[in-house]
Image (cartoon, rainbow, N blue to C red):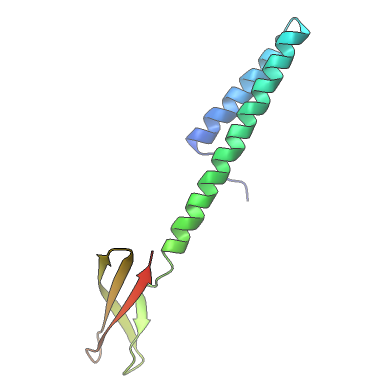
Length: 110
C-alpha cells in the first residue's frame, strides 16, 4: 500500500525534483554534476526522514499495547478501564468489573 508522503518528506522530494530539473538545464558538466549530487542528497534526506517517521509510528504502536479492557479474575467477564496513573517510568492501569465489582491493576513499563 502506498502512503502519501508527510509534509517534511514532500519538501525533500520537491527539492530533489528541482535539482534534477536544474541538472538537465545545466550548461556545463560541473554545474550538472553539482545539481545531480544535490538531487541525491535531497533523496537521501527524504529516505532518512521517512525511515525516522516509520520508526516513530512503530514505537507509538508499541507503547499502546495495553488493552483498554481485561477479564475479571472472579467472574471472567470483561472489566472496564477506570483509570491510568503514571508513576515514573510506569503506567498503572486500573480495571473494575461492572458485574461483580472486583478490581485489578496492571503495570506497563515505558
